[in-house]
Image (cartoon, rainbow, N blue to C red; front, side):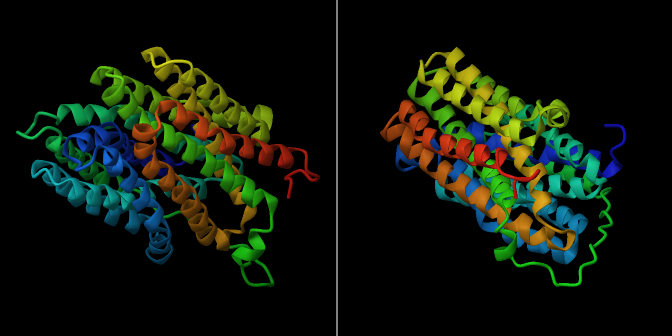
Length: 392
């Protein structure tokens, strides 16, 4: 890790601060929603709107970075996030459910920006250090797992209306991130020399490695988001588990999402990307089995930890694999389509989670993910045993 440049560590710290918005919204979004939503089945809509916002803006955000550069885009979006956080706090203060949903939708820009941190880190290092760079930046998520929910609780009673102060404190975190990200420097990218123009997406998408990379990240995010979004509602609202226990389960889950990043690069060196992804899928299947067996605190806790580990292996696996499908001059358009597909499917999962858990129950949430998980297992197995070292 000591070989990694300054850019990587700047992005890691900024990720810890800015990604806190995700854990904060996941933790309080459904709880606040259950209090002020006009219909209880819309309780998780603020969480879903954040994911929908990410899916909608990910292509424009990527285009902005191509046009103005990583650094300037990061600074602009951090400043923008400060304003949106204050507006979100105001929406809770006036009990405006739909304004809150609009604000979490606007946070999609923040999330889309943070998701580009891993690509910026990968562009800042040599090819052989790409897995380490991607894993290191994602380590910021460990801190975000605690910073987000703790910020939510610290600001819960800051003002007369509960949780309005949580978003005010979030604006402070964004301000600190803004000051830190100013030290980032755009990496120098050497364009490859080809006699032909950059390939179209149609040509790039004919590679098997392209779809394996995207599907791994998309399935990893979709299954994780679907179950995670429903967990606070199922635990606290339906099963009556204490709020501090719900917070602990969500925090443990988010830590499990990012803590393996300390060793994921070494695991890739030992067993390879293909076996890493299979291990992630296996973790998902065990997660479903444990969660399905009961509604006790221990079931939620262990299953959500496995959910986080499975996400880490699938997401880092897909992220590390994606650069093998494009040339340097093709990176922005491939990254854009990757992010759009990943967060588009995640948006559908988050949007439907609230309805599913209220209308059909926790068990239905779990069982509905099995076809997607098994389909991804089939894709990875076909790639694993395909001819050629990359399975192209």
